[in-house]
Length: 299
Image (cartoon, rainbow, N blue to C red; front, side, top):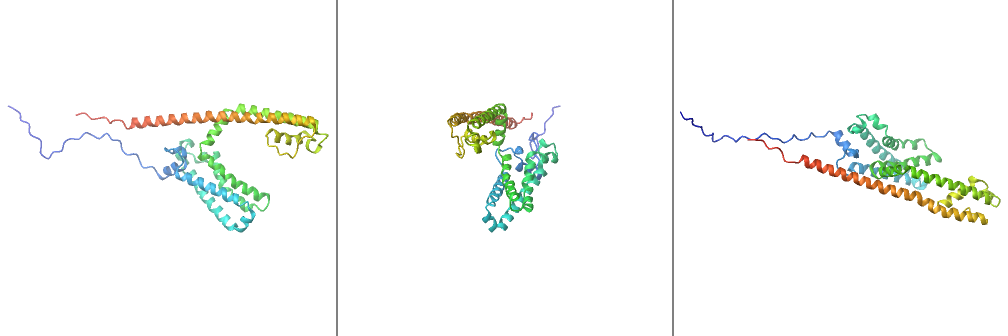
């Protein structure tokens, strides 16, 4: 008996292969979004975020206000304005510090501990930039007031955390630390020898300027660094001869650490470019692997 196959129903929908698309990534939390704005290490894009750019602007403005505040007639005339701007800027920087502490647990480098982040030099510098406003309340005219202004000017050091140039500087100096120490040792030795020589030949003629080796060191420093203030100078023949030798030696002495640092900077920047090129190549390879053709399902 022959078997007949019934035709498919006219309204039946064709079977579809199961979808292999991955589910959409979860929406980042508010703390995660804030962390990406404040922590350069959590950003996928190069450069500073808009939030960090605004923070840099606040720091520069706060330093500018502190610098202008050292002009006594201007500060006395607009004292209320200066204090209001200072309090407002400090409040914004305090809010930024609290936000950094709050979202620091998003960075795996701190192991989920806010206290560990707060003990880092960068966080301590942020806190000091906020607490420096308290020095105004306890400072009066004179040295304490100038010290308070200086502490507010030192806020400019906070910008270093937003730039990789300072990391490159530290890397360059550390890579040539031994060479720099040797050059400093040679400089100090030459400083001592030139001071002793000038004390020997000029002490009787100019006791106020060269009456001791520490006094002669002022002239040696000015000569070796090629500053040449001119307030102290030798008058004897031997003194002028030693001065000429010291001045000529100082030219090479200044060039020695300069050449060491220039070579170190060149090597450090080259290593940084190599790291950036490697990271970019890895990112392209990872992106190409994730966007490859999806596996097709069999019939």
